[in-house]
Image (cartoon, rainbow, N blue to C red; front, side):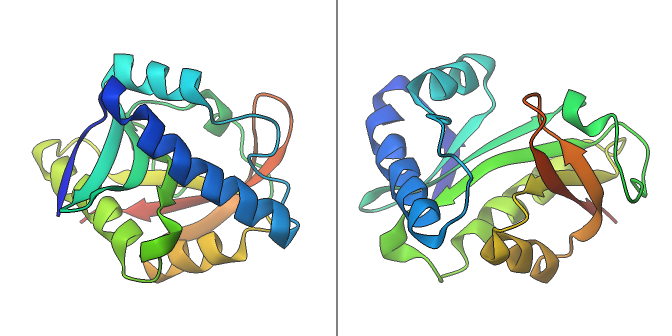
Amino acid sequence: MKIRHIQQADFESVMRIINQAKAYFRQAGINQWQNGYPNTDTLRSDCDAGKGYVLCNDDGIIGYMYYAIEEDPTYLVIEDGDWPTEPPYAVIHRVVVDANVKGRGLAAKMVQYVADDLKHHPEIRSIRMDTHEDNQSMQRFLTKNGFVHCGTIHLADGAPRMAFEKRLA
């Protein structure tokens, strides 16, 4: 398995996986990714910024994530809690795995890729992520992978999200 930067030729494969996730959320009654986001323009922006990553196996692309060392403006204000570490930090967004290979620890491999990469950036002491309050599977994943629930943040459109942080050793 390999993780690499997304390329424009990958957009169709990644959108197929994102659309699987959108359908799953819709069927599960989770109001996440139901307004057209993320889309090809999102991927193009991620690609142009060098912050989109694909997880590949011999059969092709089986996962995607956005990873960056940057301060996320939606993380500036946190309610009902606090961030345990100060900036700078890394963020991971839009983690998605092909439905045909779910349950094999692939999202954890992507988070581990980030943690390993951050060993080259000792000034970064944590990884932050967020998820919809109804997305129980992502909440379980985050907790299982060392993330701690820190409070509530709000997206640019005002939608609340559960905020998580993983401290790095």
